[in-house]
Amino acid sequence: MKPAPFEYVRPQSLAEACELLAGDEDARAIAGGQTLVPMLAMRLARPTKLIDIMRLPELAGIRTEGGAVVVGATTRQVIAERDPLVRAQLPALAAVLPWVGHPATRNRGTVGGSIANADPSAEIPLVAVTLGAEIMLATPDGPSSMPADDFFIGPMLTTIAPGECVSAVRFPVWEHRSVGVGFFEVSARKSDFAFASALAQVALDEDGRCIDIALGVGGVGDRPLRLDVSPLLGTRLDAASVAEAVHASAGDLEASSDLHASASYRRRVAITLGKRAIEQAITEAGARPLKGAA
Amino acid sequence: MKVELRVNGVSRTADVEPRKTLLDTLRENFLLNGAHAGCEHGVCGACTVLVDGEPVRSCLMFAVQADGYEITTIEGLAPAPGELSVIQDAFCETHGLQCGYCTPGMILSAHALLQHTHTPSREEIVEAISGNICRCTGYGQIVEAVQFAAGRLQKSNALRPNHVSPGHHGAGHDAPEEGVLEADAPKEIV
Image (cartoon, rainbow over all chains, first blue to last red):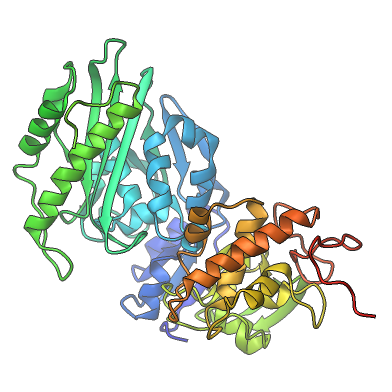
């Protein structure tokens, strides 16, 4: 038994879970536990109590709600991966899920857990930031929400306060007729932590002009980052203009160095993947493949 | 804490500390030693068991979290004492066992895959066992074993449920239904 001793509580309601979390700042919520349990085993975390929120009905399910798909926090990653609503309306989430861990960890790992864990190279937080999702929170004072961009504040750091818990993620749906997605990541082995990853979503009109575009990169800095490629809006996209926009937006990209990859390597890979992700998204959105695309 | 778990179709109770993993509970309390302790922090896949029919790392789940789910260990795959399931048999025939440490996890991952599809591609097999590390580096024969088992199951004409069904003899074994002969099974020795 490698984890330090803790108390285990399975509350019957979300309100009770929040009360338990507010009552003891060393208590931790557990859902799938696919990151938390290794941290307990290595004793990097020593919570006094584990509050098991996995079976709370308030946190379950995937539904549409006013131009968004709301994914309940305890939705297991494998369920979201197979969900027809996600495939049809959230192609970006559908594209990244096969890259999240391994099949056996996706069977237990949850969408909300990945968000709350805030790993800078994790794929689900990257989708949330790229699409401008809202993180829905349960707090002792009732429900609240926070834009994903403000929610992630550093490696494994979020704005969650004691007594709060991620209840759902509200991903906006792009209603345009032709939407395409591109996703790439570079890691030492498939399913390992990404050195860098890039996710793009592009919408084109009938004439092939870009009417909406989003680009995000993960694994590069201390949290997922959305890059500003708005100069591409309203234009016909070609390889040269995409490359120019990605380079310009990545100019002040703050990358971090570690044992696995240097900051400059990460920045270069992110730029290359960013271009490829946009190009793939354009192709998928139904436009002709770009001339001269790498 | 007292927990009541459904393991291989049988209800079992144990008194465990909350920090006791499902893996340790299966091995120590129920003497089911087929799930192996490898890295014990979710990297190697040696501890794989099926939870409601899907592969899960039993070192990343506490026994107290597991009540109410159908848990299947490698011991639950054999159709009857002294017999092997089609996948277990295929591992023997193609030399997919090697040192044997990763084998239970590999077989359970393969079992879940073959419950979903009768005709997996090589890529799907590789993806399905990507969370199971073999330190003999013998993935060649393991992939071959899963392909071989898939072929045999296709020919067996046996109905297979989408999910592991509880009860019967062990849970959701992959052997042909009773009375259905496997196409290339050896003739019974009289």
